[in-house]
Image 1: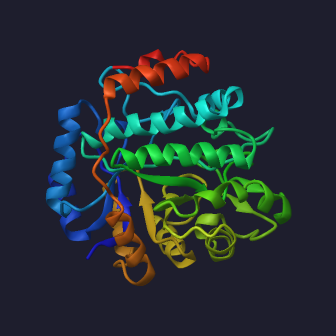
Image 2 (image 1 turned 30 degrees about the vertical axis):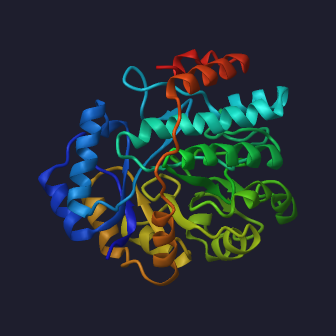
Length: 344
């Protein structure tokens, strides 16, 4: 039985200490970052070693959005545009914008699936506002909930068609944050009525996606004392009830600067608030051990949701990849991204 956390790794190869940790701690999944990535064959070997230690069923995650956030990139892998590019094309021609997003998701999935990566932390449901921190910025698809949710759904469809599960983020919304949660805790003072109609509304059409990630953001009109990740109010009343999200809920990285206290304390708080899984990314073994000590064995609703997510994985649909990349490049050039480099 696996424990309720996802762990990062320190580098491009699995160390003997990490191998022993994985076998003993049994995290639900692994997540990769640029420090873990050198070349296609190396990434596949690292994933195979992780699955040898944990079991072939375990999910392997990555943040592959495009733009500023893509862990796989040139020269070994294609570059992809930021999310805002889909929004620009959508404004010009809605059908083309949706098709481009779906195709972008499908092509990213092709890159990931052939390596053995089967979960992408994408799409975003965040709706940015003027004056917000640029941590979201051009990662977002637009400034209205309807536009954001349509493009997000198309990206998710493309990923799933390519055999990769999507993770919608950052529930219940990071678009108003005036700070980067990697560094400090953002506080949003917007009243609940407006949040329900904008930030939260963008996630409602995405509520049936298999996995979601929380935001390290305080919403003072709902819970002034805790960010969504560690707030039973935000998870129970907003994410689960108001938004209706029914998939696996994982925390954002608990080693980020927005959270305070020990890593073990953060783990306990996120699980107690209602997160199914705790995400820990930095690959520092002493912190990984602290997370594992506090993360419970998956049980009850969390076990049912994680099992359902794993069962949702499918083999990729057939695709003429060269033709699809040429079509995607043409669409992105039309959107003014200069994304011809997405063809390889």
